[in-house]
Image 1 (tube, rainbow, N blue to C red):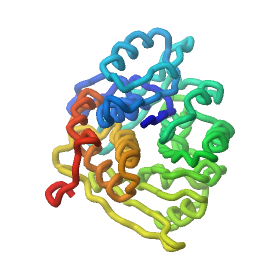
Image 2: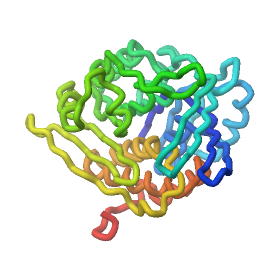
Image 3: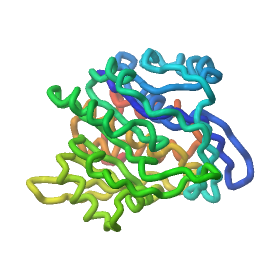
Amino acid sequence: MVITVIGHLCLDVIEHPDGTETEHFGGVYFSVATLAALLKKSDTVQPVFGVGKAEYEMLMDRLSVYPNIDPAGIYKFNGPTNRVRLTCTTTQQRIECSKHIAEPIPWKKIRPWASANVILINMISGFDLTLETLDQIRMETRDDRTPIYFDVHCLPYGVDSNCTRIPHPVETWRRWLFMLHAAQVNEAELKALPQEPMEERSFATHVLALNTDVLHVTKGERGSVLYTNEHKHIKQKDFPAFDPEKAVDTTGCGDVFGAAYCAYYLRSKDVVASTRFANRVASLNAQFAGSEGIDKLSVYRTDEFKETEENV
């Protein structure tokens, strides 16, 4: 099985509520490393993104521990890798300052890796792809009906003169969320994305009318909500988080959620079970600072994990 992952890499500098700081690879690294930890060694994760020349060797060394990552789609560019400073006021609240955002990933870099069982697109910076490139991905994979998972992430956020993230509604949001297997937003992203204010269920109704099968709304320590369209009726299912009282840092949990969903869906084709699994893995990730504990997610490897009454 093959998953292609597209999105911008970051170096996350996290200032924790107690005043301590940690620095780790972040952004799409969370998605890639999560998939590597959860999938079998015989599966393949194909990341497609750029990295600054100064960080290239360090990144390759880090990824070399994963036998199921094919790094051939990772390319070098001049200049620094996107550096994101996250000032965490609590485990759930943070201020984001983003510098050195990379150029959008061009179609010519993606096309060699478009043949996959699932394509995961994570709009880490909000400028990871152009809408035209997303349309090219959809056209290239349409005949094979390849599931495309799209994490909205920073799509509805711009950057002010101080490099601080600010909400920026997207006039073309319906085109972005058209003809996908699944779209993912958190509550803030849902509020920021459309130009007109929308209640959650109304937003879900609009998204699922766009030939998109699934909408995930992630809610931090309150878990997530799954929306599906069954015979023209919107179905909602709530999923509580696992062990929310153990959370120490939610950085990257949305990225982990999307990757975990894709990993389990690749095996099961079960939307509900995949969502429950994603909640479980994201909750475990929240127990570690930054990406330092991401390899520990392998306790939920998809070829070994089985749902029981105790873990549902």
